[in-house]
Structure formats: structure tokens, C-alpha cells
Image (cartoon, rainbow over all chains, first blue to last red; front, side):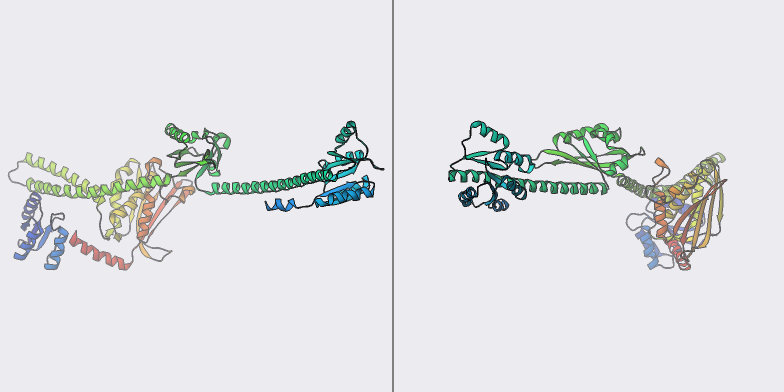
Length: 81
Length: 530
């Protein structure tokens, strides 16, 4: 099931849900990176390998859908949900 | 006036009667300057013949004549109704006593002339009577013209009256007329058709028994105020129809004034605004629903996020090594209750979520979802469910809309079986025989009350409901619109058996191979953006 090498990037503007999501995923054996905004997420994507992006939809500034569009054009290989 | 001047020059006939031709000649000589038509008669008999042939203005006659004397002739003339007003002037050779004169007047003479005749006097007298006759004739003519004109006007009036009536009866409004005090004396046919009353029942103020009891006082008060002030009236209130039900009318009355500006009558109309009112209410309702939907969307997000966080927290908590058995038990209870909340928010709030683009939806999933929502009602009403899904039923669409359609039909079916029954829900691949298209068919059948022939034509009309206060009357109308948008159709029929009725609603939604393919592409795309 969980491949230890898989890295998931969680994006959420709210702290508590973000931290809890990270903990649950880590418990399931994933490596988890977090970002509080779309911009921060894009910076992380530039700097390291990410296998999956898990993002909130309604965020101030760039929304989840817009982030998805951006990722699709810049990093077509990354699944996004 | 031209007619008057022409007739002023018209000659009148003057009949001169004397047995002596010489005298007749001398009268002729005296009277010819008047320019009238002079007729001579040598005897009473001849005079009568002329009278019958001509319209005579003045008869000039000798009192003493051999066959019929002047007095006798005058009497005979007067007897004829046509000559009652003909002027008769007697010429008398002998001196007449006052008694003689009186006798003459009694016989109808209007004047006397004694011999020797003074020509100017005779001319003057004849001229006066000729003129009088001419005036009379003109008057009569005018009279006849007047009568003719009156007859024409009466006919015009009758025509305009009948035009008014046919107009008043053809307008969609109820209409009426009232006297200045407000007493109604006329209604159009529509009033009688709608209220089922007669003029006698409605005359005067009696019509106000058609006003809804709750509104009578206010309506009457306002109406009386306008009546008194002579100002136009407008009001909105329900009027009772012949079946006893009330409909809303916009009522108006205008004062009609005569040429002098006095209030002559009132003309009023009542316009049925029930449908408009219902449409307005429905609009408000649907706007409220849309606002609720938006609100629900926001709440769904705001609730789902913390809910997920709490669920995650409990998930982390329940295996935590520091927890003893009791704490773990509490945590598990909390998790279970949380699962319930999650389920309920998903069920209700997801209902309002709106997709922007059609996506691949599964009819079987939608139907299962609705059946689950209705499961308690099915149990309560002791309704047996028979489900027969032969396909997943993937089509392109909006699940919210489709849910609305099938929820509507299934709810109706359940409500039609208050005393239990059987609900059949069938989903199959189908080909529409009328269009030859391939697609999905959903059949929803119940063993309920059935749909009567009188309602069958109306059930897809807006605001038609058999559920009285319970239904908006919009459900099937909206459903039909939604299915038509998909290029499909809804049909239904009730089959009656001795043992009961079976009512089937059949919904066909086309879905060609191409759209099936498109739908799977869409599904893949949407998986990335949900």
C-alpha cells in the first residue's frame, strides 16, 4: 500500500485541518509536505519532488481550482486532488 | 337652414270657391300679386274635389251658393282630419249678424270678409294665412326630419350599445356599471359566468357578498370613500366563484361624467390576478431556495472542513498508546457520532451543490440515493419496494437536477399510497421508439390512487396540484422542463384493474455512444478538479 518514498503536498489556509491531515497521512506511511497558500505550494513544487497534491478548494488569494490549473500546465506529471 | 329658405319660396294653394265666375276672376286679380297658386272652384262639390287633390292653405268661399252653401261646405271640410287646420275665409254679400258669425266660427271659419271687398284687406288676410300654412308645413317637415334623426340616433345608440355589450363580454375581465351612488345595475356575462349569480342577486351593493369575508370591511370602506369623492378606485381582494372557491382580482372603477362634468355612472372591471400572484410567490420561493442553496454551499464547506479535521483528530486519538480502555471507548463513541454528522451533512448539503458543467452521473446511484432518503417514509406507509436496475445508467448531466426529477416522481408515488402498496423502480437501457434514439429509461410505478382523466392533461402544467396546500404545483412542470433539456421526455399512464390501479411514470433520457464516450472523458477530467 504505502510506498515510503511517496511525497504528498497538502495545501490548506487553515492550520488545524492541515496539521491533522499531515499527521493522518504520516501515520499511513507517507511523507508529507505542507503549504498554507497556492504560492507557497508552487514554491515547494519548484524545489522538490512531489508525487501528489492534496489541496483545499476555497482559499483566500489563488483558489484550489486555479492552483490545479497552474500545476497541470507547469507540472503535468503530478496528480492533483 | 337652406331647406327653410327654399321652402319659404314654395307656393301654397289658395282655393277660391264661388258660383259666379266673375267674382272668381276679381278674387284672382286681387290675389295674384301674392304669387301663390290660385285654384278656382264654381261649386262646393268642385271645391271638395280640389281639396282632396291638393294641399290647400286657404279656402276663400262665398257663404251663399246654390248646391251646398258655405256653412255646409265648411262643416264637410272640417270633418276630414286632413283639413282640420285649413284656413277658411268666408265672403258674405249680405250683412252678417254676430249670431251668423258665431255660427260660421262654429263650423270652422277663421275669418270673414264683407262685401264690398277691400282688395288690400283680402290680400293681407290671405297672405297671413298662406304664410301660416307655409310655416306649418315647414314645421311639419322639420318635425319629420327630427323624428327621422331621432330614429337614426336611436338606432346608432342601439348599435353602439350592442357593440359595447359585445366588447364588454369579450374582454377577459369581469365588468360592471354602477349609478353615481355606487349601486350596480349592469354586469357583463363574465361576471355571471364566474360568480354563477343573476342581476337580481347582485343589484345595488349586494355584490359585496362575493368579497372574501376577511376583506369586506376594508374594501367597502375604501370603495365608499372613492364613490363619495368621485375618484377612480383600485383595490386587490379575493372574489368568490360559483364553486365557492376564491380567486384574487385587481378591481378598478372609473367615474364616467356627462358633458356638464357631473358624475353620471361608474364603469368597473375585475382582473383575475391569481396566476400572476402565484407566479410571484413561486418566484420569491425559488429565489429563497436559490439563496438557501448558496448558503448551504458555504455552510457545507465551512462545516465539512472542521468536520474532517475532527475526524482526523479522533482517528489519531483512538490508537494512541497513552489512552486506556475507557478513554478509547469514549473516543470510539465520539467517532461514531461524528460519522453520523458527516453522513447527514453529505446527504443534505450536497443536494445544493451546483456543478457548472454537465458531468458523468449514474442514474442508479441517484435513484439509490433517493430511495435511501425516502426509506423511512416507505416503511411508515408500508410500501414494498421492488428495485430492478439492469444498468449503472451513466449519462451526462447534473445530478442535482436529475435528483429533483426522480425525487419528485417517487415522492408523488409514495403520497399516492397512503394505505400501503408497491413501488417499482426500474432502470434499463432503452431505445425510444418515436425518435429511434438510444438511452436510459427509468420506470417508476405505484399501486396508488391513480391519475384521473380530468387531471391527466393538467399534471405537467405549472401551479397544478392535487395536493392542495401541500404542493406547489411546480414539481412535475419543472421535472418535465429538466428532462426536455436532456432531449428526453416524461410520460405516464394509469391502468385500472378490478383489484386496483397501477400508475407508471416513464422517463427517457437519450444517451448516444458518443455522449457515453464524452461522459467518460469528462469523468476523468473532473476527477482532477474536484
